[in-house]
Image (tube, rainbow, N blue to C red; front, top):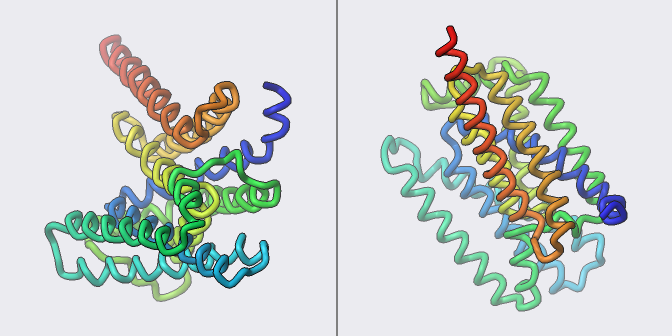
Amino acid sequence: MTELVSIYKWAILAGMLMAPALALIGAQLAARDKAMQTLCVGQGATLGVLLGLGFFKLLDATEAWIAVGPFFTAGLFSVFTFLMTERLVRKRQASKNTVYSSLFASLLALGYLVCVLFPPLESHMSQVFFGDLATLSNSEAFVTSMLGLFALGYIGREWRVVSKDSFHQTVFGKETVHTSFSPAQIFPWLLVVALSFCVQYLGFLFTIACLFLPTTLATRITGRGIRFHFLFSSILAAVSAYGGFLLSLRFTRLPTVPAIVVVMILLGSASVYLLTLSHAVRLVQE
């Protein structure tokens, strides 16, 4: 077991850094009521990855292009999907989730059709959708760690500005108009880069689960502030990434990402219950 941890130490570190980064991004997206839209954008990134892989394999491109090229096609399709969803729900106050769900189903179907057009992609479909942190190379783990560190540093430093922007969008239903540069303007670009990168290298399931599971569980804890919400979400994501990875190494038939998600659900639910119980006991004592 110790030898396996030593072999996968960089992949484990990458997961432990990217998971809390995604959790903090997801908390802001949840505050903006962008969860379903992000699900569509993430599926758009998945379609972009599959098209990029098929295109570069068809051209018999070098391994470097096959590794990097799909990231750019994922980014392109992420932006395209975001703009499409914005256009489709513009001036629509109700049934936005219906539009998002329909688009998600369409993108999912298109992704499968791409795999049919490029038969070698069938194995990649499972990889892109479910992900497997154990397959990360050292260079990919390094880039993942750096992106995770950047996202953590950015949101950790500018959380007040980004949260204020999220509050403005929630209340007024539109983005804040900035007359000069604001750190909050980096957030949409960080989201596109993180989604495109994580969907390709870590998988759609890992990306969406880390974005929204921690913050969903954190909202069940009452009587705490926003700082606690962010702290709880990020710690839960990091510990789950570590625990789920170790669990998959201990039981080799377990895939890493589903193991991480299950650990996150169990650990998060247990933590919520204990924290809620302790809060209730404290209120009774007072």
